[in-house]
Each structure stands twice: as structure tokens, then as C-alpha cells.
Length: 364
Ligand SMILES: NC(=O)c1ccc[n+]([C@@H]2O[C@H](COP(=O)([O-])OP(=O)(O)OC[C@H]3O[C@@H](n4cnc5c(N)ncnc54)[C@H](O)[C@@H]3O)[C@@H](O)[C@H]2O)c1
Image (cartoon, rainbow, N blue to C red):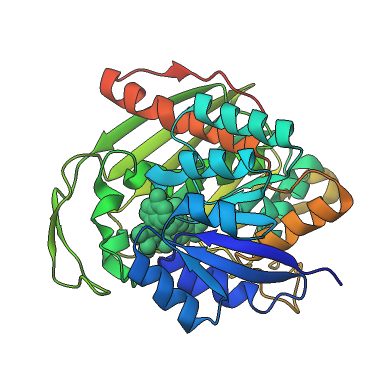
């Protein structure tokens, strides 16, 4: 069986805690190299996980290392440049979110992938999640009738609050990153994934609610950081037309919550993904039906798990990418969807500043 060689850009929290341990268990993938602008971190990471090569210079990685797939899991502002170089070098690509900072950047990446005849898979991973797939199926089957509203909850207490990191988390609060790009991308991806069609308009109320923070975990525990450059608290509204609207809360200002991550309301019922935002199948999906023809009115038992024997995890995106390469099919995380999400992300600051509902221009 062919093992696809992977090189990783960015040896931070998500690389070391999530992707590398998960990829090491995959039968069809092997790690060829890691690279980080922080040379000590790259070296330490390679040694810790017995990865044969490490680099601190991306051009050197591309020139000297033989590999098939580049995983871009570096900090957000670095994504576009990293992605373009990988695609131009003819590497298949998986990029963490958001894959770029403008619609134009993502279009450039999509065109570069087509030109190089490589597969390009864009995080976040929600389109592959079994619970999201189940909700899409329920909506597509007409089980809850015509969809009238979607409500998504995609907030947490901040990357400095609970995620353990060796790297200084200050970059999450600076222009080029921020709560909208880091967390809003999840809420908007989930909403558009479930609706399975692009939104037409966006509005937003945003606030800087915690202008100073103290790092509460990891190597920089106790460090005070100024977090007043970008809003950290958002209420986003979306309009799909045809009587269907949506609301998404997102940001870094909810230390804990009991709100379910996603709920869709239709003329014949409601479908809910239980629990807080996560990647695995977690707490499951519940359905409320009000269908006089079926003589049903009330909450149904939780739906059976789709993959009861396997925990769904981040590296499933790499398995999906490998399948697309081997069968020459589309990936399950198309960059065109990511581009629509980035269109919404880029329109939100203007909508908030001008206190207006603004049109969206992309499709998927
Ligand atoms: N999808 C998810 O569930 C999820 C969760 C957490 C983080 N993320 C995303 O993963 C990415 C990394 O997040 P993290 O939490 O690991 O951050 P982190 O700060 O812990 O690590 C980022 C690493 O990237 C390195 N880096 C920065 N610029 C670079 C460049 N130009 N070339 C090479 N390395 C570079 C940094 O030195 C650091 O080691 C971000 O895009 C973030 O949004 C996704």
C-alpha cells in the first residue's frame, strides 16, 4: 500500500497535540518533514515524534524534501503565501482555516491548484463531520419541511484561556487573525454547510468586550496581553432569501456555555446538534417533528450515531484528501466553499462598522 508523504508547516498546538499523533496512526500516510519559522520548535517537534527531517526555511523544504502533501497548519496570516508556494510546487494541499484573507487570495489558490493538477482541501472540517452530514440529509429529505431559521453557537473563552500552547497566543488578537477569522470561520462554515447553499446577505453587531487579557494556560501562562485591536464578540446575521435567515454568535468571550452548537428550524420541525462546538460526533443529533400526516408531534429519541465504532477526528481530513488523490475525485472540503465563507468573513467588519446589511457575491 502506498504511503503518502506529508510535510507539515507550523509546529504549534494543533500540529503537536492533534494532527501529528493522529497521522502517525494512519496506514496510508507518513510524515516526511516538519517546518516552522521557529527553528528550535521545528527541531524539537521532529525529535519528539521521530520525524526524519525538519526545516526552518520553507523554500529549503520545498527544494530538498521529497513529499506529496503539504499541510499548512501555521498561524493564520501566513496561510496564503504558504499555500501558493505549495500549489505552485505541485504539492497536494491541506490548509488550516481561514485559507486566505480575501476572496481574491482564495481564487488565486483555486486557480493555482487547477493549473498544477493537484488536490486542494480547505479546513475547517465541518463538511466531513457525521453529525453535520446527518443534518444536511434531514434537511434535504424535507423531514423538517421548509427551513426558516438556523442558529449557530461558535464561541469559546479565547485561545489564551484554555488551549495549551508553547507559542505566544498574542497573534490570535492581531490584525490578520482575530476572533472572527479564528472562530467565526467555524460558525459560518457550519451554517453554510448545513444549508447547502450560499447566503445572499450578511449583517453584524461586533464589540471589543475584553480589551486586556491574561494568558491562562501553556508556556506563556500569566502574561498580560493587549487585545483591543479587533472585536472579540460577534453576533452575525445571514439571509439566504426565500424566508430563511440565520444567526451566529462567535468570539472569545464565553468561558463556558450550555447552548447547543447548532439548531435548524423548519415548518415541520427542528433539528439540533447537541453540545458545544467540537470536531467529533460527540453528543449527537436530535429531532423534533410536528408532522400531522405522520401523526408526530414532539422530540424524537436521539438519532443513532453514524460511526459508532470510530471517533471522528481532524486527521480524517487527510484521509479524505488521500482518497481524492487516489481516485482523482473532488475533496470533501472544497476550497470554493471556503471562499464563500471568507467572502462572509471579509464583509462582516464593513457591515458592523456601517451598521448595514450587505450583499454577498460568491457561490459554491
Ligand atoms: N480547526 C481547528 O479546530 C483549529 C483549532 C486550533 C487552531 N486551528 C488553526 O490552526 C492553525 C495553527 O494554530 P495553533 O493553535 O497550532 O497555533 P500556534 O500559535 O500554537 O502555532 C502556530 C505555529 O506556526 C508557526 N508559524 C507562524 N508563521 C509561520 C510561517 N510563515 N512558516 C512556518 N511556521 C510558521 C509558529 O511559529 C507556531 O509554531 C491556525 O490557522 C489556527 O486557526 C484550528
